[in-house]
Length: 325
Image (cartoon, rainbow, N blue to C red; front, side, top):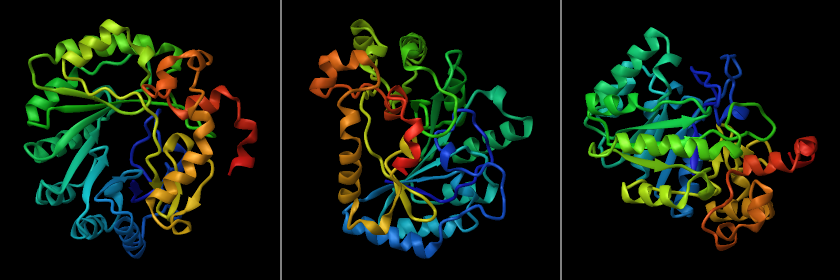
């Protein structure tokens, strides 16, 4: 489960998977999760016997009581995955550096260096330098066919980061607009990923797939090479469950515009997951392309056929959005 500390971000990535939930120009109405509501979530997680939670935003470190909020969760015995763009104040970085490394990790979502201003790139490098040798690893999202991850190799080695890169595919946010690569173009992405894997051989750096990839993005020979080189392969679409600052819940960001409920409507996390599995089970069975219906890997559960965002788009359900709210 993920908790959104705020719905505001100090970046505006064109592919942003949270775009449907964010306020990109900071108005007085932007939301920060209240500490009392955070305690409600803690009790919910205890009932659910969940020991790990993701911290998201927007940019979660923009929460005015970020340190207190993190402390509440850690004192509750929760392990934290903190997702950040790295553009945080120095005192926040030092706070994170002082935490017990066994109780958290930071995933820094990094884009091409060309996408940052000189000041932003300086702050990002400062964050990496100060959090080096701790629990900081990189995350990279692919949203266009022309991408280059080579800079991450030097970045990891220079700042002694965790030798692990989460790689994700930007996918359509149902009911919103963001940049992403059409699923028919995935084999081209697959080729570029293989080229990158060759470059990190011998460095100790591992590539870890996030959800959204499809088996047909790669040939059997390419899959064998990825496996042999230690890549963590993943071809499933699963309900992660996100909780907004107002305690609203949704299945994942790709489907965050539909069937929102309140966390307090459910007894525990299993009940939330069951609710969304029932809502989306039919879509999961068909995949995101007509060819998925004939695919034995979908039938056997080896692949989900891509992100639900692509599936909903394929069914042209945008005109029924209001019915699904």
